[in-house]
Length: 186
Image 1 (tube, one colour):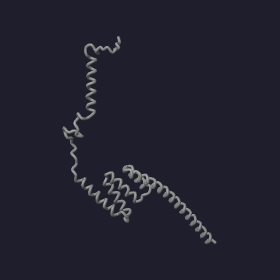
Image 2 (cartoon, one colour):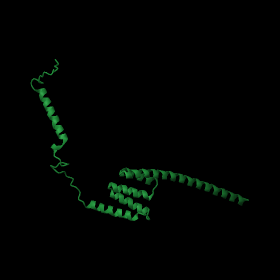
Image 3 (cartoon, rainbow, N blue to C red):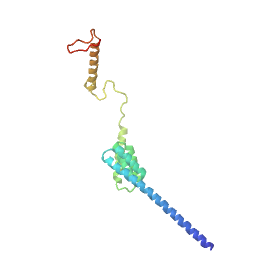
């Protein structure tokens, strides 16, 4: 009888453990569904922004999608954004991480070609001499002479007007008399 009681308790313990495991699995599945929905929402928004050429905003959305659900395909999209923004080092990093997480990727050869191309561009940037940071004396920033700019002539007109007005107010006799009906305050 003691054995029957122990086996019944053991059966109840197993049943309770099974219920707890099912409940935990359901909770994890619900969390997974929320993460998947969030990732899909960010991905779709990122796709629209990418199609519009707004790569910086698309990058933010793809990164949020990856944070919600770390799927390797998001890393490829992140790499594409970095490449289009000219951040070749970050693009290479994302592409390599993508290939590491998805070694059997269908586009593996194309991604490896992108990596090789970007690494060549990175090397080319390194070989270019840096621009001289000292300013060139006597050269204008945009190469146009000063007198061809609209604001230069606006300033000349303002100074001429102010000078003429000052002269008329300060000369002997004040303002000239006219027949137009000047009002004189006394």
